[in-house]
Image 1 (tube, rainbow, N blue to C red):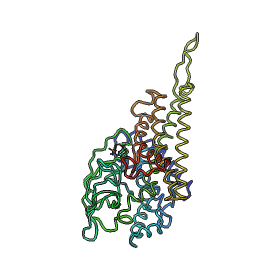
Image 2 (image 1 turned 180 degrees about the vertical axis):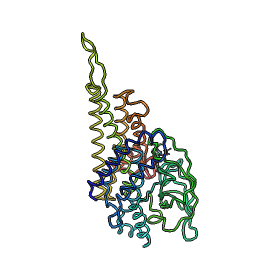
Image 3 (image 1 turned 90 degrees about the horizontal axis):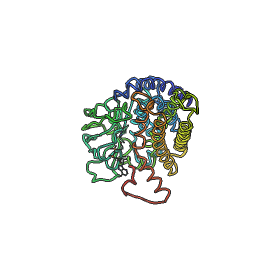
Length: 405
Ligand SMILES: Cc1cc2nc3c(=O)[nH]c(=O)nc-3n(C[C@H](O)[C@H](O)[C@H](O)COP(=O)(O)OP(=O)(O)OC[C@H]3O[C@@H](n4cnc5c(N)ncnc54)[C@H](O)[C@@H]3O)c2cc1C
């Protein structure tokens, strides 16, 4: 399958998702039908190498697909993003790098099995966040310890998109004899049956249909569920932040594009009365007002700038993964996308008035969805701090707010 074919598939899905988005948002549950679409058309294998039955896409192609999907439903695209973070990172770490990190030979077989299953329709999620730690890997309190040739993983994950509906979960945990700090945080891909009961506490203002509920875990898992080597989680996040950063950025650019399209549609079709000197009021479309046009023009420029930053980050990830300049491009993309999405949605809803701010209308949902962009990790403030420190040549070490992970 070519890049163009994956984007065509994504466009078809986005059209279907858009028609269901208002109802999914109202219910705030897991969008089973949208995810069934992904399974059916093979997009869960987008980042899986062709040799393992997938589409063999790289990061740039992923961001293009994610933007298209998010134009249909930000929440469903965010669920896809979590799955892509797992499969993309696994497929994207070169074998030589994995060997240099010291992985056991069985790792390659276990990794290929995870990827092969994604190509066949298995869906994965990410369970890093905990209360008080957010997504800061170095602060997680979930632990693991050796048990019967495998590991016991114990803890509580507060926010996991798709919790209870997926085939496997990327769980971040620290060695139970670790006093703290970033060096012994590891990733496990735990099977669905290892997670405990899901707490149905998810009830946010936006991205409601991600069903990002919490769950407890207290399970023995096989040795082969540890991904890579022990203690690699923070190092990977620092050197290759793309799968934790830029993958969201693409989703939020798609949300911004959808907000712009909805505002243009509203401004074209809404008729307002304009006073005219001496005669009866004239009827004009909202888009005839220069102040509405200016907001749409600014939004157009902001959305396109964020899109270009995300695509450029994707291009660099494919060409030069692991390089400091690539990481900076990734942080820039996340910062620009997170901020632009909410700025654009807020400005356009102001331009469109109650015709956009009424429950059930697309712009009202998109405004709520857009709010999470700057909050998702690393938040805009944290991304800006990392970029500022890099520009200043500062080593901020463990200073508060300087370590995204
Ligand atoms: C729609 C949605 C889906 C999500 N899905 C997942 C998922 O699938 N898996 C998962 O693991 N997590 C998920 N999350 C959780 C997300 O990672 C957290 O919301 C995020 O890490 C922030 O954590 P918090 O909300 O608990 O904020 P807190 O940790 O309470 O922090 C509050 C604010 O302060 C900022 N902050 C905190 N500490 C610092 C600091 N030291 N310096 C500067 N700023 C700081 C935070 O960035 C945040 O903006 C999801 C969140 C959303 C909104």
